Length: 510
Image (cartoon, rainbow, N blue to C red):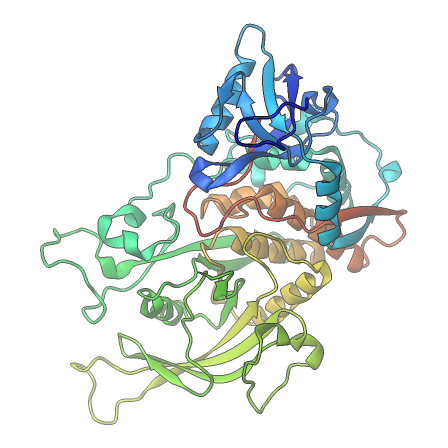
């Protein structure tokens, strides 16, 4: 420790030697790489793992400089992960790391900036069974979908299990090992050359993608396209995601998980809403953040109308926005409380009108109209989770209230349509299960979601947030009354990936 590298006179380093456990794992995750324009950092160290027990200890926030003598400068995230995993296969099995250690001052400064969210959950003393690391293999990439079926375990038992998995680190290990893209599924439409410009993220399953009706008014397909080829006009970066709620409910929550519209896909977005009879759109991002465009503003200003192709026009008939949005205009018929404006919620009402095509429209032809509610949660940065857990649960309840009585799918989007979008879908589904008294198993929900759209819930930080939100809602629902209180201090953790990237930027387990 204490050596310096050329060009970095104040760079304090340490040498860390780690032997793998019996499963060949070192017990830590890494994020970053040259492909992500960030240094390779330790994002998590599992408690009581080899990385946690070595001396000097490997700590969250440490920067990896060398792996077994190999300079990591210029190497990608995947290359770094392969270097680490290859060490376990060597004869000695030893992993030799040179790291820049994160100082205690850095840690204190970082923790001071993060809001602490206390969560009341189960006391482990109430649990009549034990959970150990060997149970991690309960969920693996190879497990069949049949194992996602809900069993007869009680809601109480599932909450006990979830708490133990969080406290032991098993929950995040399970997340790290779950497939990001289900093997064997075709993704050809999203990767066709004519569709590339319509994507922020292009791992879209053909089987579950939303298809638009082909129309000459919107089509930019080449006249030379072969018969049977997918026209450019039928593609949109959006996926059907159906989440079953078993008996006694026996219902299906239908979603369309979509990317935030681009300037060239706004008409496609509204066409999708019309064709799918959508009455609720949930937006989980701001249009611009830190100078970067996260989502094109695809709706018109208040009281204005924008015409789109296929005879569609969209009018903003009301708008209530929070102070967080700045000096935005509100409609006169304002039915949202001032307290809501001070948080990160916004609500708009749009009227979509459709006229018949010019060739089929006659005199006196009627104009069809539908109303669409637009709920926006803005207090959710691209590189973080919601800072206020109770506020997020309030927003989920608002989404559920607007869904009530509608069979059409709810459109949910963020920027890429995978990270924050997945959090909302998982959380609303979990709320439905809790209210029905059914067990909640977040990993099963996530697997079902990723079967339909890859990478939903993109990072370990997002997954942990979902688990904590499930436990909080369960306690608030009154179903956890009578249990001993146990305070779990958690902080809203930043995302470990940029949801605007098609690359897998999430932390990888080693």
